[in-house]
Image (cartoon, rainbow, N blue to C red; front, side):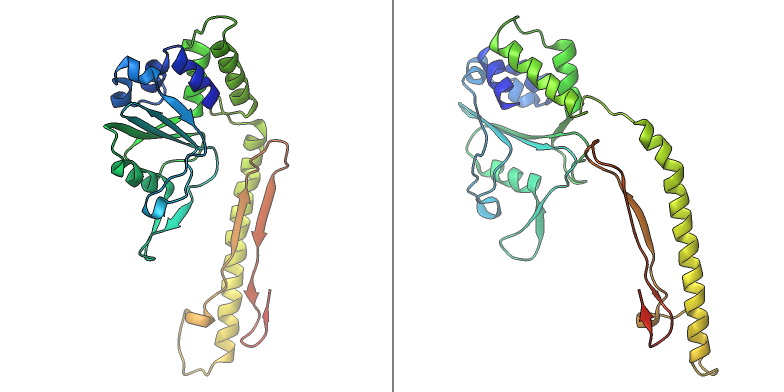
Length: 255
């Protein structure tokens, strides 16, 4: 991505990419000569309050221009403890605070993602990898044999190899759905059986004058969990994880 953007900058195509792909209107309207002077950098170290020592995935710097591109595929956002040691803040918010303190006039941040959604409060720009793939395959027309054409071709091939060029549902997902539904239904029924058994056991242990219909606190019915974890890499087989916990009597816990 960084090498493609570098070659696109040198070729004067950055304004179109910034506007059509990343949807950063203000940045796209910067003077053409300033956009041609933009340089791309990975491992840029932030030095600002809670964001100190953090490294955004990609940064562009130019005359009065500063843009952060944060890339996500499947992974959730990491959160960091604020300096007041009270609240946690996600990456995008930390980066936005950092941007707000910078002196550049034209500055912005964009989330580039495949499946990870931005935080609910996020009001900034974000685009999907499939939009990058669409631009490369349908709109981008670099000069044949140029460095830009080479980088664009390789980036598009990478996106396709990673299955990020679009949203797709594999046959294995369709086949697994009925099994997943049966697993969930089985867990619900198992939970009901366990709750009923525990309640009956508790009622048989306590004096008759103590009337309660639903145990609470430490004597609450056991909890049951059943879920599936979809594999992130296609080469890996699907993984199903479930756990069971029950209490057979007041003083004889088993698991």
